[in-house]
Image (cartoon, rainbow over all chains, first blue to last red; front, side):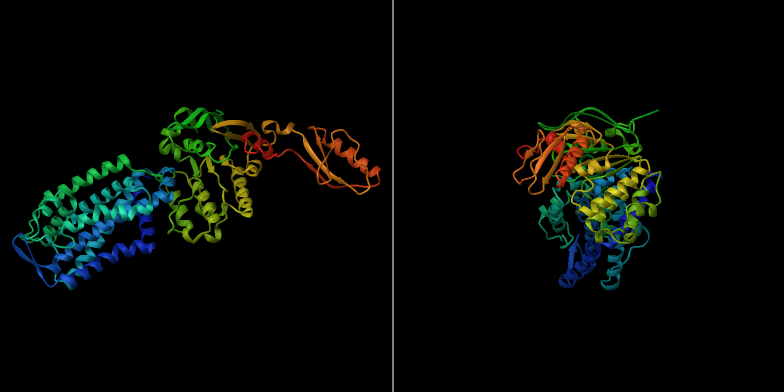
Length: 258
Length: 304
């Protein structure tokens, strides 16, 4: 069997195991929608001024939560899941078989990219049904798909890259959340970075990939004049993904770190 | 070509300043069951993990099925099966799905149902892994290792933590594998396990091989004295024989040289019959592998 066929076959098993794990499936799918409802209920009646134009906060949150769902599925859940598998010895066992390591990890990445696409679709449909979000068509749709694929693959690579820094599975949620939560807050996922936000937040957040994913997604998804879509954002996200991949290849451990 | 399955010369492994393996030589022939026996921390797992390709060695030559395991890659891994010391299996797949998944990694596979039968998990084939008992998961470990129909099987302490019944079942399973012509490299710290399964045993202690041979004759076991113990009926005189020791509990003990045991037992029972009585609680104990092992590994020091 070719390496590609092996990888795709592995995606099927990864997917099967994923849906049978109630905790993983629940947190990945229920969390973003729950947050979307909570945030829109609390703050959704107002408007926010971004790049000189007003936008309904509820509409904004549809995009924010779609990005949140992508990052949770690709970065947070992959890093925690792989750490657990590493500590349980599943990775070590796989290493002793002829399955190439890149097929195994590639399958994990492909799986979370597919999950991200489903999640974004659910968020978008939910937003269209309840929060007056307009679904992208034509070039906007193409850009949205491109942002989701590049974004989810890059954050999956960063998730794999973070596992060498995770000493054991018990510490995984703490390490992962410590690295991602501050970025989520300063990048406009939970609170839009409006024109009145301090400049330093804007500067710091633009160094990291989360902000670029938010900007690229808003620009692609809504195609509004105040959210000019820029491929530069996509390139910056991809660059982070490539760095993540290189770090993962260099430092990834198949055995429990003790 | 009569190639050895495993050939090890001068193998060394250091972790920092600690030398875990200090220059060992091993040869395992095709079709043989070889046991590496030793106490915890003796270097067993380090050695087997070097052979499996998980660890790089510090020095020495190693060939596993003609490959250097450090650079064997898939072409070696598709010919070996590995049962690690601790299990790690995806908890959400069923037994059959798990074996199917692993079998798919190998060019040569055994039918999944056949593998399930070999390890005795037929009733559990559609049960998820997280619903299996520890012993059943261990059998699934073996099933996974067999899925690719390996020529050489590594079993690292396969029955540690098993109850006696589960251990017997595991041994029967290994004997089944042997009958299909597999080469098996086993590590264990149980003497009875090595005794009952292995064609050849090497005892490792402190990172060195201290003895090697078939379990029956390991380190001169076949030349060690056999212990004979008995009690006499009340009123009988002491057996009049040189070397007879009277033990504190009132029984007698004699040691017979190899080859002398039959004659000595014959003499003793004849003497007892002449006295119009019999020997009570007669025990004839050949030297056990455990005696040899404790002597070799020094773990019996102070217990005599």
